Each structure stands twice: as structure tokens, then as C-alpha cells.
Length: 200
Image (cartoon, rainbow, N blue to C red; front, top):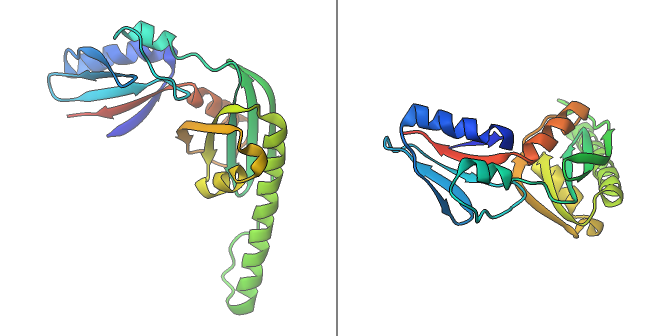
């Protein structure tokens, strides 16, 4: 199985291409998602973004139209070397902050020197996560947030009690060190349809 993120505007074309490759694939709504299985055994299950369940007709256009962003939502990306936080209203970026922090690279030295480097790295990473949590608490509104980067780093930031008001939803975004272009792409990916595809 592979996971594909499809922008809602391209969904009808994506379904048409699936049918061209695999043959007729009747659509049905199952458990809040859109499912189709072709005669050759290939199938897909498509989910709306932001943990939204779909209850409309089994039709590509209606499904794509249902992929609306929440009134207020956010994106939180964290890696050891930096973070990006954004608050959005619908599809519009309202406020954001991108920060980079220096975290010591690994050393090949052994013994006490290695332990000292490890402690320094841990302290630098902790400071970076604290900074990310401060900005997330200031910028993000209570509600839905899409996360990505390094799972351990994101978990460390979300452990801040001020962020308990956030509800993390799929997809998880595997991103490099957050920069503005990375954040912009993450916003697009967060609003995409999540499609699990099995090709026979």
C-alpha cells in the first residue's frame, strides 16, 4: 500500500487516471471515506483532510468539494535544527514563525568528551523545543493542528501543558529542516486528500 496526498482541485483527474489504468472502479462511501475497487483488484480509500468524515454522495466532485479547511487551524513542524509554526484561517496564512537553532553535531570522540558533547546536544535541543513551544502557545488557536518533522521533537514540544488544547490530525508530514518553502508546502499537504492506494 502507498499513501498519496492529492490536492482537492486535482481529485477528479486523479480518479479518472485511476480508472484509465485499472478499469471501471465503482465508488462507495465507507466509514466516512471514499472507496473504489477496480476489476483488476487495485483499490483506493480516500480520506478528507483534518479528520473530517465524509457523508455525501459517492461522486468525485462532491468529495473534493467537501475538503474544506477549518475556520481556524494550524501547522507545527519541528526538527532538532529548527521549527515552523503557522496559524491559518481557512486557506489563508494569518500568522507564522520560523526559527533555527544550532544543535551540536555528533562527535567521534570517546569517554568523557563524548558524554559532554551529548549533554550539550541535549541541552541545545531542549532549548530549541522550548522556543518552539513558546511560539506555538502564542500563535496557535485551540483546535486542529497538522504536525511534522521529527516525531520525538514534535512530541517534546506538544508535551508543553499550554498545548493541550490542540488536536493533532493526520497526515504526519515528513519534512526537512523547516524553512518558508517547507512550511508553504506543508500547508498545501495538510489540506490534501489522503489516499491509500493498493495496485494489483
